[in-house]
Length: 373
Image (cartoon, helix red, strand yellow):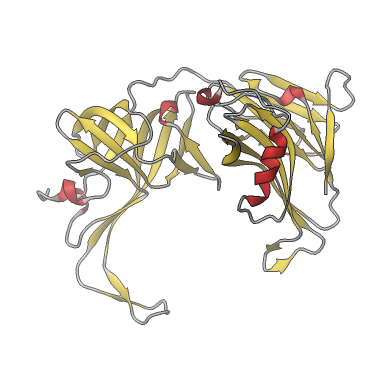
C-alpha cells in the first residue's frame, strides 16, 4: 500500500482539528477495510440525520445515531477505469487517456435497535471521530474514485461502524385492516419521537402492516379511493415534550406566518393544530391546479398533499421547523374527491396495536374536516 493512501481517500481522512457538530457524540468502534480497528466517540457533522434511499424504494429515509446499532459499507462494484475527457463541449463523445484509476461503488446496510435491517444507498454523510490516538473526520460516500495509477488494493475505506452504546432492543409493528371506506391505496404515519414519516405495506384485501418500527408512538394517515382518515396527537419528540400548552390565539398567530412560507403550492389550508408551544403540529392540505407527467398535461387533474408541519413559538412569533409529507397524490381528471376524516384511533398509536377499521362502527368516533377538492 502506498504511504499516502489512507490520507488520500475520501472515506477516512485524518485531520488534526475537530469540526463543530450539532449532535452529541456516542461511543463507536470503527473497522477499516484493511482490518485496522479504532475505538472512540462518534458524532454527526451538521444537523441533518443520516439519510438513505433503500433498495427498491425512491423515498429518502432519515435515521438518528441513537437508533442505529451498526453501519456496514458493502462493495457493490470495484473496477479499474481509464480517465477520459469530452471530445467536444456539449457532446457525448469521449477521448480516453492513458493510465487507470480505481472506482469503487458502495451500498450500505444499517442494523437498527428495532432489529430490522435496511440496505440502500447513503446520501454522503460526515462524522467527527475522536479516539485516544487522534481526531478524525470520516466521510461515508456512495462512491470512491482513486488517483491515477493507484490500484484497488491501495484504497482503504471504512467497512464497519458499531455504535456500542446502542443495542437491539426489539421494536414492534402496527397493522390492521380498513373496510367500507373504499379501496386502500396507502397507509403512512409520523414517527412522533423522530419526526419522520414511515410507510406501510398494503394488500388488496385492505390490510396493512408497517413491519418492524422503532420504539415510540405514531400518528396514522390512510388514503383510499374515497377517503382520507388521519389522526393528529399531542405527542412530540422528547426535547419538546414540556412546552407550554397551546392557547386560543395560537392558531391565528400561525395563520399570520403561514402564507409567508416558501412553497410550490399557491393553494394551501391549515386544517388542524395539536401539540404545544415548543412543538405544534399543523395539519396542512395543499393543492396545485394541474401537473405535468409523461410529456403531457393531465386534463382535469390536480396534485395535492396532506402534510404535518411542526412550528415553535419564539418570543411572540411562530416559526416553522419541518414539513413531513404524509400523502402526495396525483389526482386524475374525473377521479372522485376524497372526504377527510379524523379519529382519535389514529393518534399516538403504540407498537403492537392492530387496528381493524370498519365504516359505520359506532365505537369509532369520526370527525369530518372537509372534501379534498
